[in-house]
Every structure is written in C-alpha cells, then in structure tokens.
Length: 286
Image (cartoon, rainbow, N blue to C red):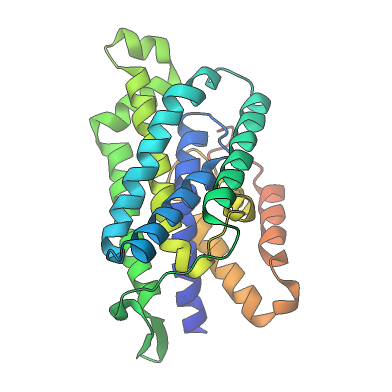
C-alpha cells in the first residue's frame, strides 16, 4: 500500500511539472494553450536525441530540454501567440489545436512514429526498501526535483518583483504599462517559463510515460484535469490536484485495473459537481 502511495506521489509530481505551465498560461495569462503538450514532447525528443545520438548524460539533458522548449515557446509567443491574447477562447483553442497537429506531423516525419526509449543512469535504476516501502530510485529523483521546482515556482510568483509585475499585467495591462511595467516582456518570459517547464516534464516523463508523436494528444486530457480540478487562481491548487490524481490513478490501476483511467475521470466529474471552479480555487475565480 505504501509503495503504491509513493509511486502515486511520484506520478502526481510529474503530472504537475507537465501541467503547471498550462496552469500559468491559463490561470495567470488567461490564454487557453492546448498545444502545451507539444512543448513537453519537444523536451522529450531533445532528451532522446542528446542521449541516443550524441551519448550525453541524462543530467545534462534536463536543463537542455528546459532551455530548448523555453526558447521555442518564446519565439512562438512572439510570432504566433501574441496576436491572439485578446481573441476569444474559441479562437485560442482552434489555433493551439492546429499547432498540436502540426507538431505531431513534423515529429512523425523527422523522428518516425515508433516509441522512443532512453537508458537512465545506473544510479537511477531499480528499487530499494526503506521501512518496508519499495522505493524506485528514479521516482525518488522525480519527487525531490519536482518538490524543489514547486517551492521555487511558488516563491517566484508570490514573493518576487517579477511575480508582482505579472499579476499587475494580468489584472490591468494598461495601468501596469502606466506604472512602467513592460507587459509584453513579462508575458514573453512567463510563456517561455511555462513552455520550459513543460519541456522539463517531457524529459523527465520519457522513461515513465513513453514518448511518441501522439504524446501531446495522449496526455492533454491529464493536463486539463490537473488544471480543472486544482483551479487556476494559484500554483498550489494544481499541485495538490496533481498529487490527488496521481495517487488515484496509480491506486485505481493497481486495485481495479479493469476500470483503467475511469477512476480519475469519475473523480474529476465529482469534484466539478461539488466545486465548479476547482477544488482549490476561490469562488468566482477564473
């Protein structure tokens, strides 16, 4: 039971890193970016190429996946996303879904449609027992790294000047500009941060989740569930929602495998019936 709980926490942490960028763009920037999974896929393929073709260490691949995805996100934000900030959510959805299918087609053409595999470092393989709990080394690595990211991100958004500028730009961009805030730069950096975190999550998830050109569509529903259940008014909401869903998904597939992913869909419906704005969102919040 405790081993399942541990694996569920690791899975939930990974879901949060994958989905928190969407939480940032949707909750803080009010932009519905359903192409979020494409940036995660980019990070995964950066890791595959660096490890399998060039023999680089997995540890070097993680910052590279973040930086490449963040750079691609910043470029696309400047060229494609920015004109749609004031568009309707329907226009944003249609545009970002188009980006998803273009990314899938491009990856399938250049990398092929097969599942991609990586060889983790020896110290991250296998399990060890601690107080009767079977602890996977790689899952422990994910938990430690993601916990650090959660704390850092929360502090950055709530305790720094940049976080204050971002909230001001979202609340009233015209007033923020009048106070000297470079709203365009703040949005660009925020979008790049969200894309980079998605890429990092894709790199971390390559071994656990698998990687192929359909990755953005396969896990889009998981990203949406995390953001929907957790609410978009804070980072802590999606984090707690990701943990809850990760544990529920792992436990459900272990104890009642015939139900598959039905457990988390039922949980999402139940939460939204009781809390339409999300489990941890303020009433009336976005």
